[in-house]
Each structure stands twice: as C-alpha cells, then as structure tokens.
Image (cartoon, rainbow, N blue to C red; front, side):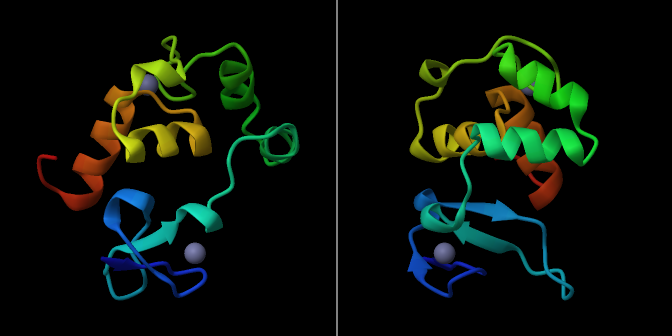
Length: 106
Ligand SMILES: [Zn+2]
Ligand SMILES: [Zn+2]
C-alpha cells in the first residue's frame, strides 16, 4: 500500500501512479481519484502552458513523447491504462519513465 500525496488516503500501488519524488527523495504517489484524466480542459491548459506539440499528438492519437500511435486497448495492466488516461503516454515511454524514476528495471 502507498499513501496518496494529495488526499492522504492509503491506496493499493496498482491503483495509484508514482509521481516525482518529494524533497527528501522519497517516491510519492497519487491515487486514482486525485489524478486528472485527459480532458478538453486539461488539453487546453497544457496548450497554454506551452505543450502545444504534445497536445497535438494526443489529439491525433499519438504518444506525446515518441509520437507513435497509441490506444487504450494497447494496455493490459490497470496502472498502465490509468497512466495513459492521465498523460497519453505509450507503454514503451511509460516503461522508460519508470525505469528512470526508480532507477531500476520494472
Ligand atoms: Zn488521493
Ligand atoms: Zn511513446
């Protein structure tokens, strides 16, 4: 079990996404309820924040990082699907990200 950094609830690791480590270098998590899935509003906000290219990719059904086609049915695990819903990343980019984050093979 992990603690959601946002609401403080204890959640199963599979139902939460690791986010950047806190100031002490400890991994922090956000529960499913505290994650914001991609929506028109979120995309619009991202575009205003300067992620224009990423937003265009997501709208075309491409991974915002490697620009390869990605769709929800590519994901088998609950967590990877959740990750996709939140940021649109493909499985390969998710794996890369977590490998870097935990500094280990996933
Ligand atoms: Zn939460
Ligand atoms: Zn990708």
